[in-house]
Image (cartoon, rainbow, N blue to C red):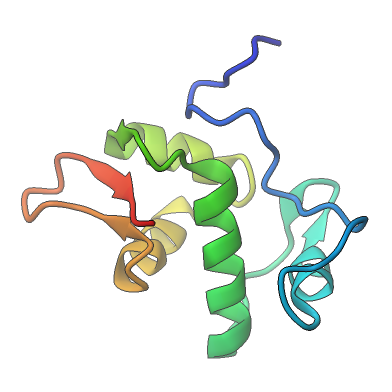
Length: 109
């Protein structure tokens, strides 16, 4: 495998269970949503969903790069089949920015 995948990030979205969490219960909370590197479900609770979305934005997208919709979908498909819902949620949460025409996406830092 090359050092960069087609979506521009070489890190896995599945959180490591080792190390120190960024906040109380954060690493455990996000890690519990993954099995074998795949997201098992998209949480309904707002706080849990926001944790997940922040994690996905940070691990799947580089801050200094512009992505096409195809690239965003490809990155999200590595963790869950409903890439459209995750993409929409990332934009609505203000974690990915998109112009009105939807021509590109950027991670918001």
